Image 1 (cartoon, helix red, strand yellow):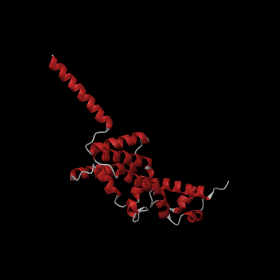
Image 2 (cartoon, rainbow, N blue to C red):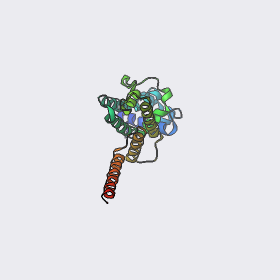
Image 3 (cartoon, rainbow, N blue to C red):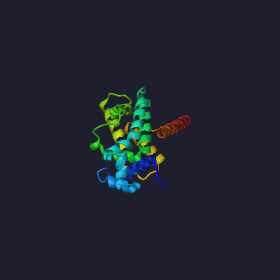
Image 4 (tube, one colour):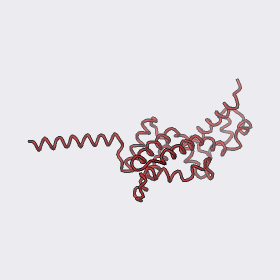
Length: 204
């Protein structure tokens, strides 16, 4: 049964994403993508003029989510901004693992952004992770957290999505000097136990 144009276009994109992630953007040819998608190169070129056009469409969902995150963070400040930015960026990175790998691989080729709203996005997310602090040390920590999460997602470590998201979130919050909720709760419990022991010793 012949595929519809929409189905073929979707298969081309899926094949391209997998091949770009596995062999790199430069290491994948249009013929490789066409063969993997089960169509001719001519059929592929009917849908996409070149590899760059395929890449641009593959990254549209990531860019859309990033713009939505930017808008969500705009009205936040302090610890709320930092924690929200870390949690949301970790979720985005995990959700788009393969796309992050492709994005990292193709940064030199990315001279034009699909959405002008993405201009300066990294600066704004880092500022949120820093809790809007102007302190250079906080800004450095924020960039380390942001860059580390991006590279970790692109590395695609052999972990399940939820485990990876939790690990990335905890590591980023430690980098920012902010304990993850679970670690904070553990610390508070230990502090309470310590206070209890101290009171008992005092009573004795």
